[in-house]
Image: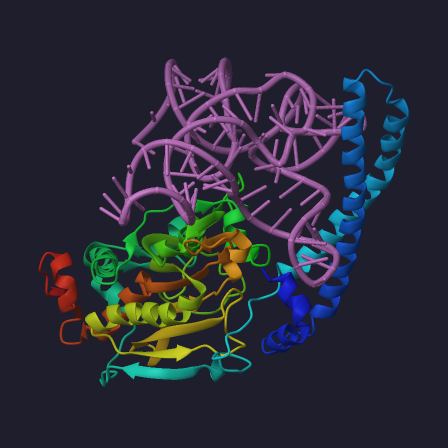
Amino acid sequence: MHDLKAIRDEPGAYDANWARRGLSPQTPAILSLDEKRRGLQTRLQELQARRNEASKEIGKIKAAKGDAEALMAQVAALKDDMAALEAQEAETARALDDILSTLPNLLDDTTPDGPDETHNVEVRRVGTPPRRNESPDHAAIGEALGMMDFETAAKISGARFTLLRGGLARLERALAQFMLDTHTTEHGYTEVSPPLMVKDDAAYGTGQLPKFSEDLFRTTNGYWLVPTSEVPLTNTVADMILESEALPIRLTAHTPCFRSEAGAAGKDTRGMIRQHQFYKVEMVSITRPEDSAAEHERMTACAENILKKLDLPFRTVVLCSGDTGFGARKTYDIEVWLPGQNAYREISSCSNCGDFQARRMKARARPKGEKDTRFVHTLNGSGLAVGRTLIAVMENYYDPADGGIVVPAALRPYMGGLEKITK
RNA sequence: GGGCAGGUGGCCGAGUGGUUGAAGGCGCCAGUCUCGAAAACUGGUAUGGGUGCAAGCCCAUCGAGGGUUCGAAUCCCUCCCUGCCCGCCA
């Protein structure tokens, strides 16, 4: 959601920023509706003030056993005008809201310009992709081990589902535990086990609604299955006025994520890169406005730290204007090296949403001793996508000699000391 | 799912149609007192919006949304949530 007062003050800045995302000028329509709405509101409030005053007068006259008939008739006459104004005001407000709620966040000054993902800018590269002749992908490795079963998953659930068995199922679980423990014991995050089905309001707050409902699964009684635990985690502060001293709040959760993947037909159809259901360890930070930029760097480093501990090669890119998501001001994607694809693939996305989500969910903070509240800033990042991390481990730790997977040292405590997964 | 009882300001809690945005208490903030603190006393203490250079004035909000009325925290309807009992159930 956007600050109408700020749009009034400098519409040019908003249009210029939205133009970086390829949008045509939006503020003329917004300002015209805003002016209309405020005019209606002012007139309506004048009538309400008159009504209130007269009603008080009637109360006094009646208390004194007087005759208030004339005054009562006078107020009754206001009602038609008020009803009409109210309806117009509500309709204008709705039209305004329809525009505002579907406009993306303003981009940060440091987000580079560019039309699509080919213009993202690499900011660092860690580790060296291994050179080898034979680099089967995770699907081939997993199926050969008998521990990754797409056919059975398809029989039960259809496309874009995977069934893991034995060592790989355990490896997935180990990865999640390892990530959670690292974030809670080393990075200062508090572990949360949140609801995975949410109401409209929550999905609206983080920006999935109203524009992206097609990407979500919905239950027959109206719940949305979370596409990421960013939704419940960030919404923990919805409708609150926090004390600034209580910030930052850092939350992490390990949850399934559900995505319809509408519009992704034909993309990543092999293997478990793109699924309707996957596990993710998420990080969410709630900060004071002045702290979010530093927190963004910190959060990205926390995600990178997981890859470093797993000794997986990766690079970090900053998304360009055309690739930055709806709610984000600035986003770092972390891409892990996948030998099976001979490419870097996204394994984490860390976004600073500024006050965009906070405005939608009315999450504010008040500095101690001050009267005024400010919207908090919200950030979210994967730390990491567990399914894709599993893939990365499989492909990078694959041993062509026996078709097995060496267990990364950091995970061995979570695997009962196991050093290698073999058939 | 059935039944009963409830949802009021940061918290507790009054309030069943008329100057109630809301008594009282607690908490918090400031002041007085004190070497300092506590206690006591005095004052202040919601959010959003409109309007105005400003001081201010005005509007809305007592779970949410409708309705009745000149006037609703108070009456009616629908929904949501919480607690307890019963049923069912991991």
